[in-house]
Length: 372
Ligand SMILES: *Cc1c(COP(=O)(O)O)cnc(C)c1O
Image 1 (cartoon, rainbow, N blue to C red):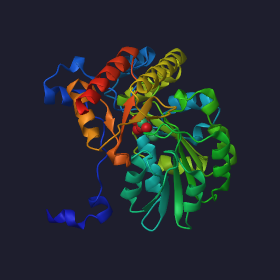
Image 2: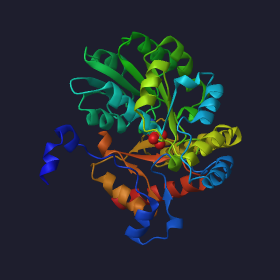
Image 3: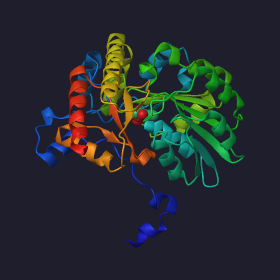
């Protein structure tokens, strides 16, 4: 159709984000009962939703005829006391993807550029491309962010740097001191977007003092989400914390009702369900040990991860990857191949329940047996 030819090339060349395969789709494709399929493909919480959040969302459903509170007053008030920040510093989003997109749309334009790491979260190049700005991908070091190289990659026209800490899909993390030094060296007219989607899964020693740093660095934006440890991926709630001037711009540009009333209610309750967060954290630590032990027994190399997922390598020809992925699908297990992340020899699995991890390891052993 001709009118599509008027669309700028940066839009026409976009490759859509590829999400993990939904359970319902695999059930249709291979004729398996949906309840027998396990999805370890999207870093969702294997415990499901926090019971307090579920109750709050069910109640909120009674009022879905009404528009949500577009300012998110109550959730922002709760976040501001939880993190000891001002409400004026918070931007709520329809997932943190929404705030990543917002920040790119506001601060980038054709002629500008943004820096991110090789193997980093696939949403960064996508939101950069939508604006017509130029993405500068910096080669990774040991699968993690090479902060000195990222600093060197910043050009006069660069307006932002994305840092995923920890990074998805590699599970790598930059240490607190290195990150602090990096932020201090970035020019104040370049935004640093510190994506901490997995912060609550981090062991204490890996947690950066990022929210304190906001006082010192007006060009820092921290993003967090309710999709991961809080178990609300389907409700779509995330947020950014920034300097009030930056937050003000973002709040002017965002859609007036970008978080649903059900999402707001769920997030507010989940934030206060510390028992659920602790349980999820402990389950994840144990599951990580279970999987790394299993990988060692199968002689599989993995990238040590601090997230709720881990990426591992299948030796031999890269065609082994689709074979293992397909074999697992046929055994009712969905994980994630990492070709689009320039990691054609790796697969990523989300830490599940102990029984799911065990089923995954058995299925993987079987899939590896089929290769030889
Ligand atoms: C999952 C994830 C997010 C969060 O996405 P939501 O839109 O909040 O669901 C953000 N960044 C990274 C690196 C992630 O893996």
